[in-house]
Image (cartoon, rainbow, N blue to C red; front, side, top):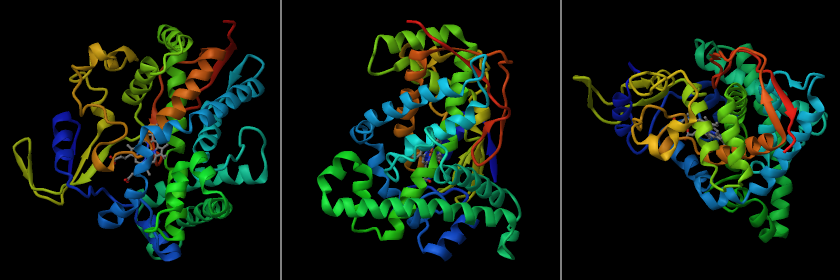
Length: 403
Ligand code: HEM
């Protein structure tokens, strides 16, 4: 195994990942899905099985397809603004923002996959409570079965049972939704294509069986929940502590520039300082040389990109929040492999476009409605879960903005 924090080594790693990039699998999830569904999905596996599933989510990387969900993302972000107004404390603080944003992330992704709003932000029904609990439980169970010794192979450990139970819950919800959608698709395919082009592409894919469709919908639903909420909570944290950046971002939104270059730079800067993935890993597809050492194919190389991206070798003032560094004039000096929060290559995050649209839309709506401030320390760390998340509650004041 090779471990590195060097951006040149990271480049070598990705240039030698091959056509079917392989990374450490999630054996408990792989085992459970094979036994229960004979369908593994994208995340846990490698090789040809991974490639087949990965091809089903390629539409998500198309700009036009993602943009077709924009109006719905706007509606959800606007609901979140009302939600903030309702849930602020007397001094206008939202406590533990990450937990509230998890509800936003569930709402935002669910309109694409499985294609129904669960209304977690409006009411606490048994169904919404179940979904929230199961989403957290799944990530937790996946992490515990991944890092610990594989005792689950001998008997069902608590972590394995947690993974299984939460998977069953989400699977049930997704399956029910997709059954309704299948009927809609049979009656009125045109409307489904217009309303939800991603689910339309899955339901009309002749290479997929029913379990494959449910599995892919489930993975896209769960794929980015905690990463999206953590990145949003951290961006609001940094904007609350950096008033100049906050004003510049609001100015951009007020001018309704469609590209939101500065807001995108804010997200990039958050993900540079606090990427949700601690590392990028691959089993090499080719023999290669790293730092003069011959490294044979099959070796696991792990690049701790979360360390590289805050290294003074690659970034001036590496610990400061400076979104400007990502704008056109400055960015040319940045090593292209020094900050890779969505991974790289054929296995990079397929939800990147969707996540960016969800996050920009939420930030836009918040900045138009509130001045955000923090009464707490700007210092914040990350703890390892399946994805890294803030190590303490982020509490932010949302003061009504009079524009
Ligand atoms: C801020 C938000 C997000 C971040 C930072 C993020 C980051 C990542 C990273 C680092 C990877 C591993 C890539 C690699 O190995 O090269 C990944 C994979 C993945 N992400 Fe995301 N992600 C986010 C949002 C999402 C969303 C919204 C979805 C669903 C639409 C999603 C679905 C997935 C899936 C399915 C994979 C596995 C891809 C594969 O194994 O081929 N992610 N993500």
